[in-house]
Amino acid sequence: MNDRIRSLSSWGELLKNGILVSDVDDATVAALCGHLADLGVLENSGEEDWILVPDAQGSLEVDQEMKKHLTELCATEQGFALRYFLKDPPASSIINGSHDPGTSKEKDISKSNPELLSQKTSNLSNLQIVKKYGRQVQSFIEMEKNYTERLLGPHTTSKEARKIFNFILSRMKQKTEPRPWEQLSRRRHK
Image (cartoon, rainbow, N blue to C red; front, side):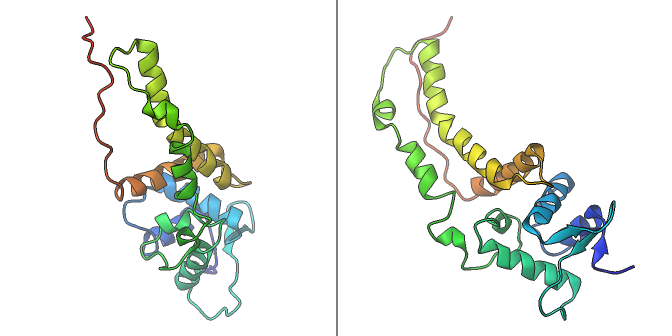
């Protein structure tokens, strides 16, 4: 069998065995393989068979060629999610530039309505608590919507896009500091 023609599960095994970080589960790898097909790294060559799009050189081993494709895609806007999956992400990528969906836009969302964030009350009703919680998670909801819309494609469903987003979010959580605790209400609920 040709090394370049495999099933998606076989491509997933190749990715898990040296290219991706170790904490990726099988379902996320399957979703990532569909996303790679959307990015043009893999092409459907039969019912279950997928072929690695050939490199211009063509002299590399299949796993090295796959790693090269993924590393190159990390520097593009379409491949923004790949850097969270790679064991050795490239040092310079578009993430460090202005196209990073995780830097400027997310910060702007949290600053979008400063008068709501600055309002403090000591006696919050249940409706006010729900509104305050909604404001706190609004940036997360908008970020999820932004990421999943960018991940959708012919081979990536919304469920798979959310799976990829959840993995990206779990990788982001490891790098961010926790938010300070904020008291919502002093009123005792009986």
